[in-house]
Image (cartoon, rainbow, N blue to C red):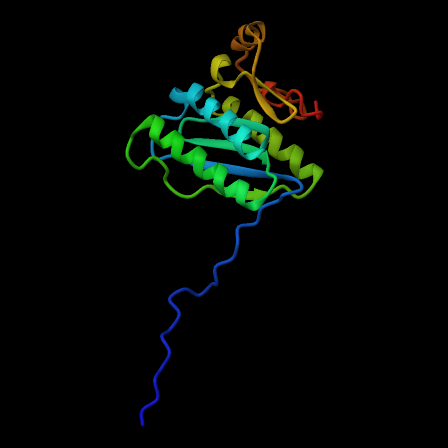
Amino acid sequence: MRQLSLPQKRHAFRKTARAISTRGSNHVTLRANAFVLRRHHVAIRKILAEMQRRYGMRLNAIAIMGNHLHLSVRVPGRKAFADSMRLLTGRIARTIGRGKLWSSRCWSRPVTSRRDFRAVLDYISRNPFREGIFNGEVDSFFIQGGLLQDAPAEERARDEDLRVGPEPGQMSLGLIGTGLA
């Protein structure tokens, strides 16, 4: 009698669950195939507000770039994270309506320390300045109590004239109300 052989594994690594922090913050990046996200910043912020209401997510910082989004978020649980990312990516894709919008799944990692948290916030807040695309209308907002708020008109007007980023260690408008300023 001939012995049956088991099929060989196709992948060298076993699938593991995505590392998500439910106690601290997570740095999340969503990358699009085209430079269309900043044009739809109003719709994206509305979708983010809905995501917060539905799933209890709290934002620490956000940067809407041409072809990607950076978020620093706190999530109540693993399922809430998955559902909120599904809502966010699906609604943005339907709003923009460009076929396959996202180039890959969202990238995320847990923020592991206070120093790491400050570095993530600094990175996200300075991103539009670094790329030279800061615009007071798109990039001026408050995050108070983890909820996204629009900046007052006088703040947007003042910051429209800014063409350089905040000094290292200082927080930009996207971080006001986080208790770290």
